[in-house]
Image 1 (cartoon, rainbow, N blue to C red):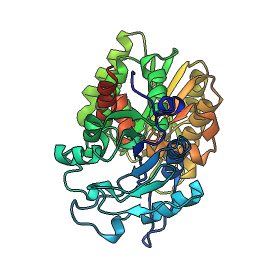
Image 2 (cartoon, helix red, strand yellow; image 1 turned 180 degrees about the vertical axis):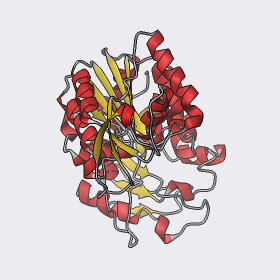
Image 3 (tube, rainbow, N blue to C red; image 1 turned 30 degrees about the vertical axis):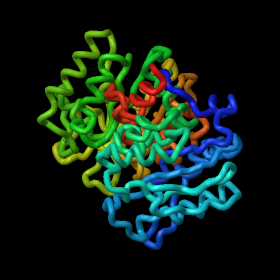
Length: 397
């Protein structure tokens, strides 16, 4: 993917003395008192900001936070806690600027945080007048927010149309490289793990991957619908009987290419959905009418783990069982540790997937952990993300 990279501009000395506008993703969770409870996104934004400061730029950073009402700023919408945390991480003051669209006072070697961009009228609808005002603030626009790359908003798309220079920050560039490596030019066999509660939310992803991957591992409620598609009982498990035909079509599409969707041969069931519910391992063809399938069984997990050993590339989105409950976490843990131990290039994304990676402490063993939830899913669907599209256009690619 041909995009201009901010790191190259800095290496060439082209950022010195320039006004640099960075669209970061600083949308972090907070408690009821406004305290940040998890700061991964803020820490991930620091390399780009530090790069701009070291290059001698006058640096402006903005992000959305939550879902504010446009044109109606409220204290709970403020990036003030983010400014405090950024200052700690950067080891320098990070002033917070409100009402910044009509002008920002920042000097080379300084950084300011521009208040919640979604408070500006026209942000979400990518209003051209707003985008042009923002573009007038900057000499170099940098998109470093993969988490919002699937949205065409004023700070993610419009400003990139009108700014003198538009480029990708290091975080966005890393996502582009990892996605290209995993999906556009994968080392084969290419294995995708797609799990979740409903086929309907990931049907287009499954259909897109069926045309590309060598093995498609399904888990969670999605797997139950596939079990139904091959005629196996699922008791009272979560499934979508209305999509059995679509699941069967995915199996057929894979088979036509000599690829497969491994169907569980054993499962872990319970009578109720609860952390303390007794867990029972059963063959997949012996699930009772009052059973809930909450995990893949040890035989299935071991077989899939063995197959992952020979993979060239692994794309992982979703735990294969209710891993939050220890009794139903073994399948996800086995798969996670197999991915970590594999020589394959692995890319993982999605909130539950990241939670599983953290739970099993395998962060350093995953090739690339994507920071975007919805954006990562749209990439798996084969969609071109708006942020990528405009940066490619501006780069002439």
